[in-house]
Image 1 (tube, rainbow, N blue to C red):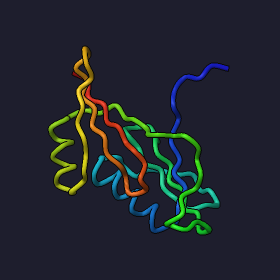
Image 2: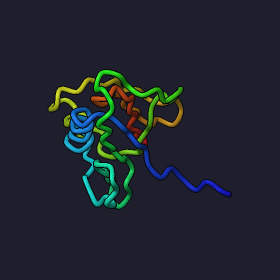
Image 3: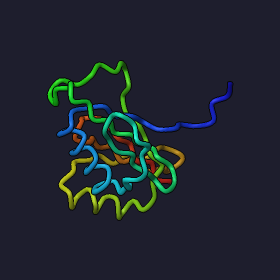
Image 4: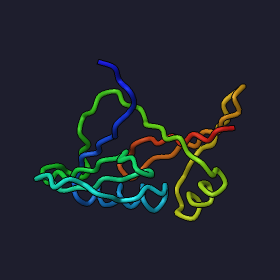
Length: 126
C-alpha cells in the first residue's frame, strides 16, 4: 500500500452546526458545495476545484454543544492563493485570524477556526 495524498476531512455534527460549518467554508473560505452520492445519511461535500476535500455529515443523535471525541487532531491545513483577498474576506465576515510568516521560506500562514471550533491553517506560497 502507498498513500498518495489526503482524500478528505469529515466533520460529523448536529444539523445546526453542520449548516454553520458549511456556510463558513463556502462563504468565508470559498469552497463550493458539489455532488454528493445518495448516502442514507444527510450532508454536504465541499470542493476546492474538482477535489471534494470536506465532507459534512449530519448526525441527528449529536448534541451541538457536545463534540465527539476525535483524539489529538490539532488542525487541518489548506494550500491557498490570494492572501490579500483572503484576509479581506475574513475581515468582511468578522472572522478572527492570526498571520504568521515561516522563517527562511517566507511562506505565509493564516490561522483561524470554523464554527465547530476546528483550527484551520491556510498556507500561501512566498
